[in-house]
Image (cartoon, rainbow, N blue to C red; front, side):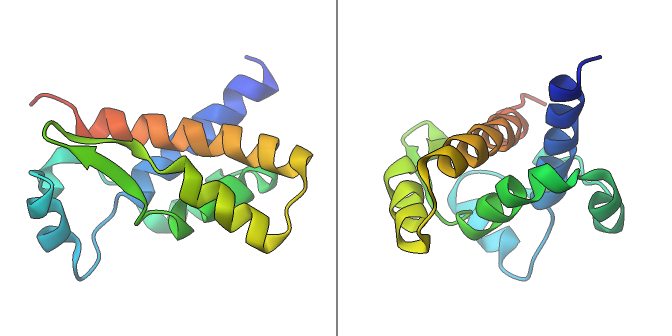
Length: 120
């Protein structure tokens, strides 16, 4: 297994944890036609050990941008990249950092969308 593939696996697991429950999660999920039963939760304490240091920026960016979902009549379909890149600009991130972190963010986004859209 390549380092890149192993690294993406760690991001996928982190994405699963990031779908964990918070105080307003049930209400927000109901508004989107979902429930906590749509997600397989992982022990959040294990994520810190499992996420490689080079992946933390993508995990943290996803966490910060987790309110920036786009959705339509069929539900959630992706993150609002305009908001994400605006935030990166405000933070002063360089082009290479944006490319690297954004590719990791897309891995997380894809996994979360798969979990959201799983048919039970």
